Image 1 (cartoon, helix red, strand yellow):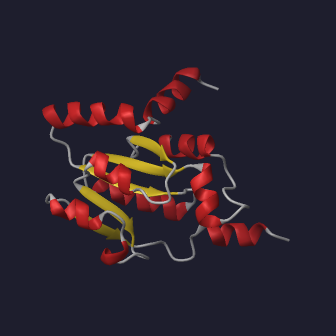
Image 2: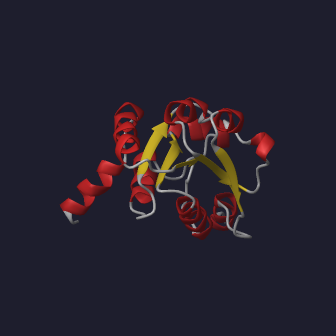
Length: 165
C-alpha cells in the first residue's frame, strides 16, 4: 500500500479537539462555508457517494461526523456495524469531496454540531426539517439546513438483507 496516501487519509480523520483549531484557522483566513453531515456509513454504496458529493457541493468544506462502533450498536442493534469505525472512517476519508471525518460516541451529533457550528447542516430527504438533530441550533446563528434526495433502493439495510442466505 502507498504509505504516503495512507498517511494523507489519516490526516483527514481527526478528533474533535484537533478539528476545532483547524476550522478556526480556516475561518479566520478563508471564510469557508462549512458543511456538516453525519451517519453510520456502515457499508458505503452509491447512495452515500451521491449524498456526500452533493453535500460538499453546498459549501467549501465537508465535515462528516461518523458514529462510533458503540454508537452504531446502540442505534442499529448488536449485529451492526458490519465494518469497524477505523475502516468506515478510512473509506470516507478516501473521497476527495470529504475534507474531515470526526468519530463521535453519542447517539446524536448534537454536541459535534454545537462545537463545529456549521454553516450548512445536511441530512437525507428521509428526514424532515423538524427531525434533523441540531437544526434549531444551526438556524439560530444564521446557518441553514438542507435535505438531499436519496437514491432509490440504495440503503445499507437493503444490502445487508441481500447478503443473508
